[in-house]
Image (cartoon, rainbow, N blue to C red; front, side, top):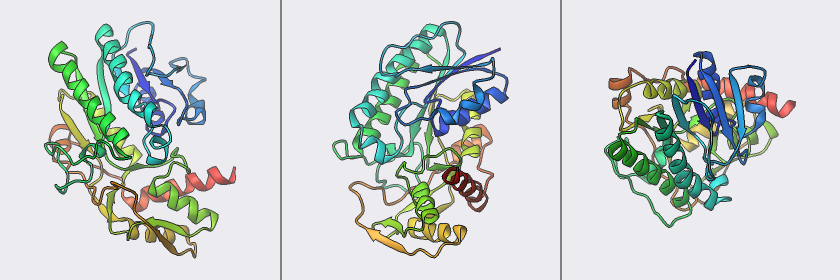
Length: 312
């Protein structure tokens, strides 16, 4: 049985990865310090003999006994509300944490995949964003702690690949949604659905003309799984190119939830990207991957999840 280590394993994406690798017949070791992750996301796996959990901070020394075939590094705060609250930990998990895990991968002869992000493109001057675009990031702005941690993470990973010959993979993840997101994580989708369910007006920052492209979590996990098993070492965008303005998105949520709230506008946060849409040509050509779940379908499932979460 192949063994995989998933850091951030109790988080939104990490827990879905744990499910996928269990389903594929792997022995899964989840690691998380639970700063933003939750045991609720993985409690259904604890009864399985092929699942282990380590309560550990990857920014500190890591030891995993036994062999490892794959490491997926998904430990990091991923929403502005989190990384603005814990900026130094965010920088450390992207730098020290990545360094520790690359060292572990080298020692174990494991292939390592890192979770990078569309945020490496910053507030882009190229639209849609392709992997050859170097980005427009403000390193000393409030979002810089996350953006630069991820850019450093990519650089460190490529250095291990070129200098040590380590097998590495880099996925650049665009906005993703689905069950197990935290209602209070500050991103547009959970914020809008949470406000709608609670009977509050929906808060849009700026005039709502900024765009995002939302990918359902099952599609994303499929793309990550294919990338891990591919032989491509350079960054690959995985996301849904179906672009929508934030104002239109808020209107979709109002329609979906059947609430009577209105939209209220607040000032746009500093360095908030105006546009976000992945060019997924590389993922299509290399991985035979493209998203399958429509936004209407994915939002319905996510809304039911949040409704049940609030009711229980």
